[in-house]
Image (cartoon, rainbow, N blue to C red; front, side):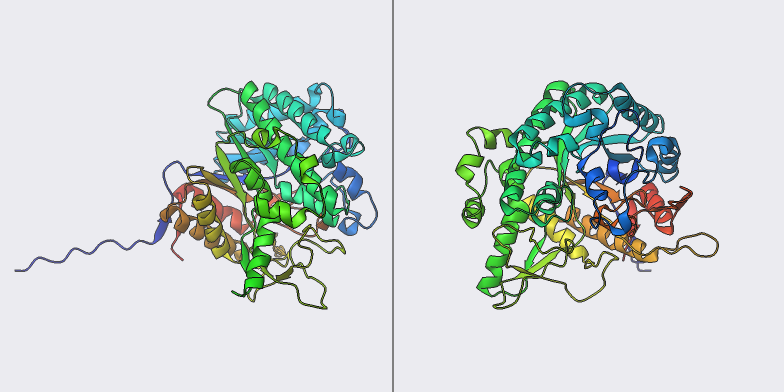
Length: 478
């Protein structure tokens, strides 16, 4: 009698490597509230949000999600969702009022209590030093356009490390410095709202230098096993066509969107084409002093990648103003030296932000970054989507569009890992609905719905889906 053929079991799930780290992320100004409590001084976002016309509906982060008072409730939520790690940012003006001098006990004590609560719940704390809330006092002496701010950032890093370094084993220096520099000092749609292309480039260099100073400070103050990262919103730039002019437009945006940070941080210096593209705007020979690029290139242990949507670009169209679909409405470009490049919205579904939904962009970005920087582990430090999220009559939020977004993007991460990308973890943006910068409270990215009137937290369907994903360390095959 012939043997019955053995059929391999059907693979119905995409499993991630053992030890893959699952988490969620937030930012201090977006959730904490308590804007004037316990010695905290104003940040540039306090000032910006109080400036008429800058933030939708005149919203501010004064209360936000009231996380400062409700952090224990929020950690309980994290535990119920099975989070293995929580990426949060430290508020610089809460820890070091004015950005100079000693730390405040109350400011540091809040983060000590938060970290202790996380550790007691079995959740790894991941601290980000800077998520855009520069002390207003430093902005008044030049902000990130001033070299001094980079030096102050190194001092602040030492204060934070000395207070929390015995309990926090993974640190991020900067979150999305492209936004800080080019939306804050170029297009003006983010705080501090300046609109000078030269200032934007100066800010980019000083943010890079601040990263180098903070990395050195963290290395000096933290235990040897501690890991240090930077989180970059790298743009997956795609030319609209293969026409040489479109290819050059993509090169230009890649230079000022990506390589202005990865060049000095990871490759030892600013790329020559970036310097050439922007030489008419800023004197790089004066801006970059001897030793700066070596300081910026201080080795990191991980690179954080934040991804939401790709950028599709083309060469300028004669007689037509450039269009940018991705970064807010402004008469000023966030692309110094490439102001005339056109951005295109591809056909297909979009999020509530108007951003194209394209998981292939994440896959391509991971693969390209792995090839460009072999041996450097990667972590997805932000990925998620805003949708309208209207509660039903019973108060539940059936956000199946977000589940689909997360499912497809996690499948793209799984594919990249299978093709050789060393991706170590994934942090969902965001744990909570929160203050979405210039959009105020109009856009909801959270896995947990927040009623801003009552502060009631309600896990959405996506939160329960994500909890199941974490528990299984896998997602269903699409």
